[in-house]
Length: 126
Image (cartoon, rainbow, N blue to C red; front, top):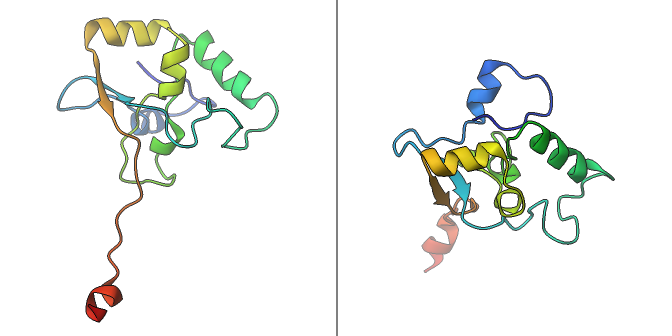
């Protein structure tokens, strides 16, 4: 199953957004909403008026899902692998989500965290 893209994308772009874990054969689903989930109260992602509704409508019309923005390639966490948005999955039961659940299941992944940076100066001072 492919996520609902923002526009007509090429095959490479769809592959880049593939939520399937190649080892487990299951689709990655966020274990919980990320800190700036588009479904969290307060518009933490500063979406323009109507943008959330448009994203949800597009995903539902395609019987698909939304990929968590924190797991999008070239976003804040390049090491993260694409995963289905927990906020969307908890609210909507599209055909894609139902099929994935019944046929393969999900593997839950935690929201990505910033890479730990070691401060060599602090270690040298100790």
